[in-house]
Image 1 (cartoon, rainbow over the protein chains, first blue to last red):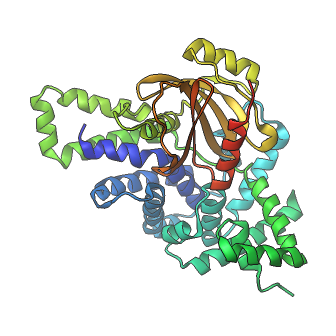
Image 2 (spheres, one colour):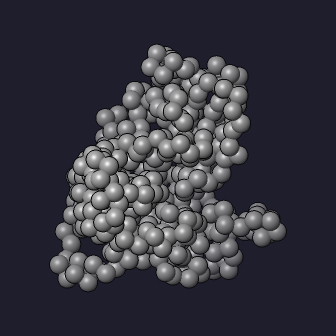
Image 3 (cartoon, each protein chain N blue to C red):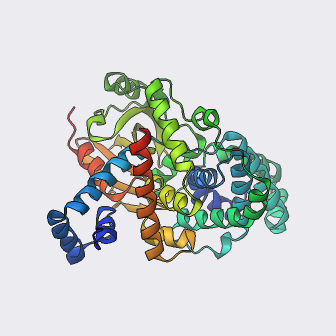
Length: 166
Length: 244
């Protein structure tokens, strides 16, 4: 095993779940998420010599987001099967989770999935990945001010829907 | 009428402001009903969103990725392949490509590196928990029996850190007991190992994970997680003040 591979596995692989989570929420499809992440990880590995330390997670998620963007046209043309509820809960369901929790999770998931893409991505990066505005701006390529207003809008939309549904 | 300060209040709530900016935002918040409603709504939403699904990469993807990276590794740096082959390690190095996804090899790096290695190895291998239980009366004896170390184990569920279980692990080549907590969708590992008088790292960010180290009694402790700074501080304070 060469040194580059070893460093890549130590620094980038721990963020594989974050990469997959972002790809999955962007694409809303397990099949597309697999393809996006595999593509992104290979791109990341090839570009790894250019990575000079710093925040490996933000670096990797930027590549994921770019992979999604470049696959975007094809994905949109193909059209999406809407979020498959069973698929969504199946992976994370815990034995103790009550039916109520599972139901709430399903509702939450479909509320997030229904957000327009540019709002969905800032919400996922902030609320699930705990990234700072600066990091979110780096990953999405949007100015910080735009990140702030999109985040505010995303939260407002979710609160509105939640009021109606939950 | 919408308050002009709302985005600024949001930045404050998200922990993006400090110093005088944070003080000013806090003062505004105390006097603005609209921003108070925003604060309450944002907090509720944040709590609710911890119940949404944070997806984990499926094992099938990890395997495919392993194969794809093997192919890349073989193709690009021919030099290291031949060096490996010459020393007879070529094939085993390729085979190890798989194993590495399950468990990263222990490095001879510092304690901080080693603890983060252990944490990430457990995360990437999906083996964070060997005994799943939210009951500290179950986890503590299991750790004592399997890791030979018996740190205090407390469920901090009322404070937002739910005890999920425990595992035995290794830190710098020596056994360590790990209590595993969930904070929303994030894992928090609390390591403990016998104090051998070694100086502890200062803590801080290591490869994108927060770390903190301290000594208590005859044990060394380390907390590792990717939760946000505020939550991490809270967890460390809780862990440092738990009783036997």
